[in-house]
Image 1 (cartoon, rainbow, N blue to C red):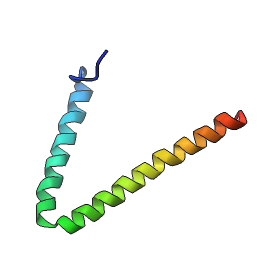
Image 2 (cartoon, rainbow, N blue to C red):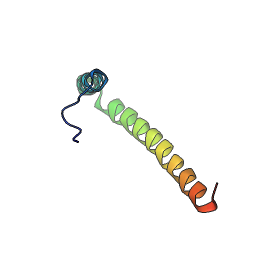
Image 3 (cartoon, helix red, strand yellow):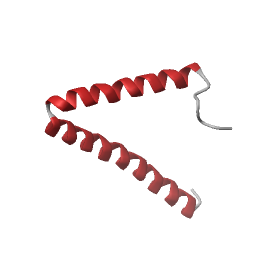
Image 4 (spheres, helix red, strand yellow):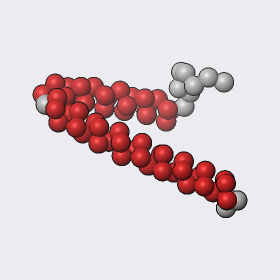
Length: 66
């Protein structure tokens, strides 16, 4: 079982929306590159923090037996 190509309609929709958002970010980033990098960094660290924080809680739960 492979992940490529997307098999369901929802996966194709997510792919198209992601590509459209990437193109929009590139076009808007050409206009104001400094703000684009600041916004990208904020979003990256925010969502990375959520996932790493959840992983830490999951590991504590596994260690203590929940």
